[in-house]
Structures are given as structure tokens and as C-alpha cells.
Length: 260
Figure (spheres, rainbow, N blue to C red):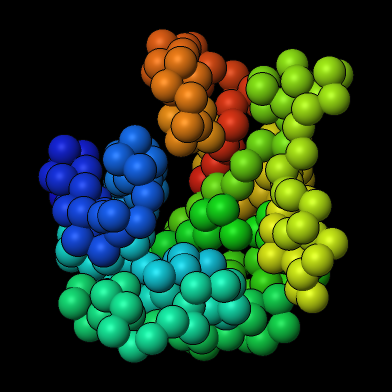
């Protein structure tokens, strides 16, 4: 089994952020995003022992696919590319990422269209921070994912936790909105969070799909991406403790295998 070098993965993620995102966001946010992409890549690489065919659904520009491709995986990026920002001029550097890193791109709406893969053809399918934006039930798609995974293949879902510790503390005081009023009310099409899951929801999905070797883990990227330096420092201080209780973390993950 190929050993996963987490430090090497993080160096690649940092390089991707600096090359394609530098100057767009504050340094603290770029650092958080690099750590987050490195963590996601490590989950995928660990699941397929560092080689194989993988698909990331809702991966946007493809930073995760870039990191995974750089680590030797054959990657497919699936997205509808309908978010604001993708229709920029062709000289936008991030348009080059599939060519620069050698991953395949499939433009489709996964809630309406079928995945372009055969049965038992993929080692890992992942979807990070995408499901909560979908306006249709993900059940039909998730059943497709089980079909395209090889026996023993891994399905990974990552999403914001609707009942994380911060929300439990602030909502009683009237704070906790995710989306701004203008984003929802003044836009023809709302692309924000429709429904965030909790740990029970992820366990429900795992049972419905017949996944085995199920793990639920938590991380706290929202705190590390906060513009307030005190919040970031507090997150670093308590992150390891919070991970012991995924149900209170800001970000939760389901990892499970297709039955053989």
C-alpha cells in the first residue's frame, strides 16, 4: 500500500493556491483553503491507496482535482459551472487548470443529468461543500454513485454542519444567517445553502446507500476562515477537542465503502 505523505500534499495545495488564487483573497483565507484542499486530497488518496480513478462532484475550478492529479490520480471534475465567476474571459488563469494538471472536466447538472461513467468504474467519488446548494433531492444521484463505484470503492461527502457549536451558541441571540438577503431575494437564481446536513443526516444517507465501514469525522474550517484573528486563534486552540465530537464541528464528513 502506498504511504500518503500529508506534508507533500499540503505543499502542493499551497502551491496551487499561490499560483491561481493569490491576490484574490486575504492570506489567512488562502492558508485555510490550502489546508482544507490538502485534507480533502489526503482523504481521497488514502481511500484508493494513492492510485486509481476518482471523481469530484461540485469541485468548481478544480483545485482539489489539481492536487489529487499532482499526486498521481486520474481525476474527473464534475460541475455545472453556473456560479457567478466562471463566465469570465478566457485569459482567467484558473481556466488552464485542467490542462496544467491533466484532469478531465464534465460540465453537467448532477441533479438533472446522469453521471458519464460506467458501472464499477471509479475507485473514489467525492463531493465537498456542494450538496447543501442543491435544490433537488440528492438520492437519485447518490444511487448512481454507488453504481459507478467499484466494489469496495469509497464515497466521501463533506458539508457544513447545520447544528455546529457556533450556531448552537449564537442562534438563541438572533445570529446565524448564512446567506445575505440580497443573495436570496434580489437574485433570479439562488445558489446559496438550501439545506445543510447534520451527523444524523449523513448516517441516514449511509444506511440508505448500504455503505459499509462508515466513518463520520469533523473539522472546523469555518473558524479558520473567519476574518477575526481571535476566532481563528480560538479555533486552532480547540480544534482537536472539537474533533472528538463531530456533531459540534463546523464541517462534517461521511466516508463509506460500497459493499463487495
